[in-house]
Amino acid sequence: MNSHESKVKNFLESNKVKAEHLVFKQSCHSVKEAAEAVNGSEDDFVKNICMIDKNNELIVAIVKGNNRASTTNVAKALNIEKPRLAYQNEIIERTGFPAGGVPSFGFPAKFLIDPKITNMNYIYTGGGSENSLVRINVEDLIKLNKATIVKISK
Image (cartoon, rainbow, N blue to C red):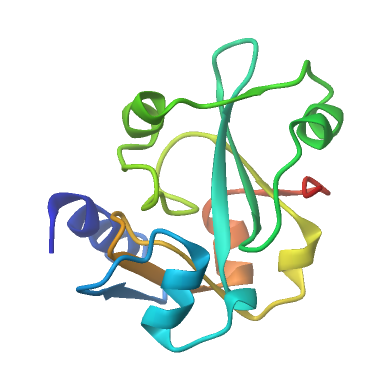
């Protein structure tokens, strides 16, 4: 387990979150790879799209794995100018995790969850690295990151 994966595991334990942290030998960077790793459906996964607003604040748009986040929808939802996608170096600086392993929690940001996720019981999200995932109950996730539920997918 690397330091990023340990950070996720420690966060879950210290916040008493009932979630499963999974580490694999194979890559889980893409939704397809992640689904293969857990022998599951691509519908069970989310991706965390990191954006930066005009005030240099981090926004994390959480959408189903096969969906895309819309910067226009994020701007409308937050009543702000259209944010831009974060660069890879900003992602690790702001979240503490590399792109492809960013969890849906555990760092300061404004978290937005697309409503398509709220009708699911649990989801898989990044586990700190490209080789790890977290399986977490959706209601627990919403509480954990104090998320706003708003249509952000295209």
